[in-house]
Amino acid sequence: MEVFQVSSLLFVILKNRDMKTKDNGKKDSKIIDCKYIFVVGGVISGVGKGVTASSIARILSDRGRRVTAIKIDPYINIDAGTMNPTEHGEVFVLDDGDETDQDMGNYERFLNINLSRTNYMTTGRVYQSVIEKERNLEYEGKCVEVVPHIPLEVIRRIEKARDEANANVVIIEIGGTVGEYQNMLFLEAARMMRIKHQKSVFFVMVSYLPIPSKVGEMKTKPTQYAVRTLNASGIQPDIIIARSKVALDDKRKEKLSMFCNIPADHVISAPDMDSIYDIPVNFEKEGLGDMICDTVGMTCGVGDNEGSRKWKKFAQSTHIKNKEVKIAIIGKYFNTGDFTLSDSYLSVIEAIKYSAYSSGSKPILTWISSMDFEKDPKKLKELSKYDGIIVPGGFGSRGIEGILKAIEYARKNKIPYFGLCYGMQLLVIEYARNVLKLKDANTREVNPNAKDIVIDVMEDQKAKIENKKLGGSMRLGSYDAHLKKGTIANIAYKASIISERHRHRYEVNNDYRERLEKQGLVFSGVSPDGKLCEIAELPQDKHPFFLGTQFHPEFKARPLSPHPLFTAFIKACVKNKK
Ligand code: GLN
Image (cartoon, rainbow, N blue to C red; front, side, top):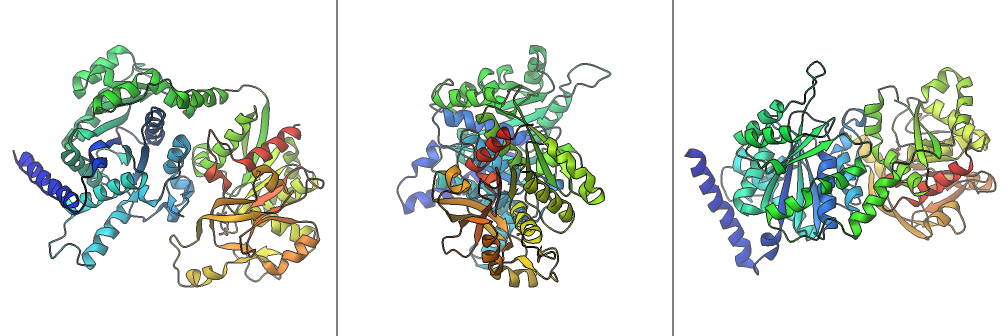
């Protein structure tokens, strides 16, 4: 009874807010048209909620809906930029410079769209807005409370993202699993959304069904409990995506149907797959697309369409069995186990894959800790086994000398080398040390007392570092670069102006530019004012592929449009095949 009363009251508040906006302008048809699909997790984390949300987004977009996606992270952190990637996964940078969760990368890749900071929220971000509004007297003298003001701010942000994208489907992934204290206010926002937008709100629970080895049978009980916990938040899932090692049988579907109050055909079997790109294809096979469209009352195109066929073709290309191309990825902390690693460099890995698949090769990635080369330089020889070498982005001094040795080896032995951000800065340091004979060359980040600071702190970063204004303050997001005619970069991009995403505080010191160029290094990409070096490379008659970018090209690689620089690198690797 009490719940009902609170709900009715909220309904009036929310509807009144709506009326206000409607009074001020014309009737907002988007509110009526749009469907909101919340994706929540049950039982355990790490079962692919992000990929599930992305896959649902993909199939609905292929069926002709205008889809946008939102990730909600329950952290207090304002953004993911201050979190350790080996613990929390990659920091994915958007065009507008927002430092977000790796799931945002999945959305962009699956949907082939660019998202903005409106599509990402954290607990910290939501509270910060509410507190700022309170300080600006925007609550008109009211007592500002956790409920309803925090959920209302969440709803405002969801609607803003909808309007920015002019979307008629918004997918909202709530981080964490149900039952956690951290995401309770977001579930409350989702519940309130349903009061406001009625039948347009839809809940998907991604759950996990374990098969205990001694029992040998797939168990539904944890999912039943998870649904009950979700029910306690006033939410009933419309669909359960049942993740498990193998496909669900009918018995399991019926059980979940019976005890979780949903029709059996709303239980979607989602067994482990070799490639995450098969998931949208499997979802359509399981009838998910039709079922969502029917349940929320959307007019959708058919499941077999131009977009889905293109996707299917790409998904099939990921199963290539032969024509291996062996890539070594060299970095500092690669001894933490594969799981963490693949998460901290997710976009790099995916970018390599897209370019490899599109050139008909199967990428084999090996993680090499640069410290190995510091301990035992003889180990460098092992690099000759690989068709190409990548040094991804990074920070700090650990393992740097080992990486420099590896870059020198790649340059001298003509192994294709691709440096991303720090990987480009280190390429320049290696060149300065070994070609310009500036033995002490370094970056200020590693040794501020070095004689030759060839990589220096950016002018506008100095005060930020001094005042410890370090959150969200790097050079972030998309900037244009102009490419030099006839260079590897220019030929790969087939363009003279490009736009790429950045995340750094240091840059090539212009005092050394002329000397480096005189000795053969080409700055093939520079900022429009010519002041910042964005790409460094060696001409192709000197080396098959020796190139580094100050930006992170991996953030713009997409399954259906592989990144031109990664593709050029892979082609060089294939040519160099051992
Ligand atoms: N540490 C370097 C800088 O801040 C490189 C950063 C990176 O690789 N993202 O400039």
